[in-house]
Length: 351
Image (tube, rainbow, N blue to C red):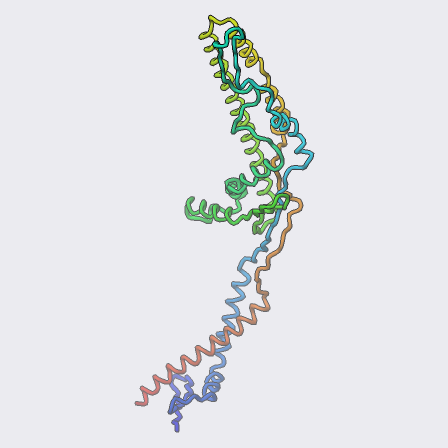
């Protein structure tokens, strides 16, 4: 139940059948494709040429590595360099002069209680033992702030500034990249910690780690040194205040030679006390002060593990096959669509 039409207009072949009941004639479709096979071949050929052009002129995808580097504390031998300083702090509870009770033995009504600080090491938030665990914690805290990674990314031009329209976008990109650096956070003492990052250059990652390690250790060294200076300054100030208090008591008790004599002895002990000087000497002999290569912790850069992450890179052969299939489909689609348009135009002419 159909009528067949053949129209030859401007030497163009149109093949179609007028179907009823929405019938589909596959033979008609195949005949149309075959009749226009050179169009399909031409479109396919053009598609292959375009695909090969983009393939040959496109950048080869860079190999991406997942770098995993262990963060190592100082050795036991390096830790030993702080033992004299730490031992002196631990044994700071020397006989003190916290409470002086001066009493005239001949007159029980005359007594004087004076409270002064201990002549030992004053309690101070600036001072604490320095060991491998404390130094390791400082190092982890410092690198977790990511500021040094931001500086390193800019220093080694890991992200190129010229690829961004303005400095704000560039800085945002640098911060995002630094945030992608993962530092393991283990709660178990003695369990190794690692730092991980995806990089396209092993050398660049190693250079960045060296920079961050050196900068972190330098800043930690300055922190410990300044911290100790604040302790010394605070301790000397407290000793000065304590001596001033004793002098005040002496001035108020000039009529009692016994009390004045005792107070002068206390004052002399305060002035001649060498605990702060000894502590300063011990600190000056720690690696913080005497070593040019101070290290709180370090990256085990030489043992970094690089795991290659596969990036899909189509071969030329695969590109040709895919483009042939795609071109053929595009050609067939073009032929069928133009055939439908020509069929509708022919119907209008016949009418």
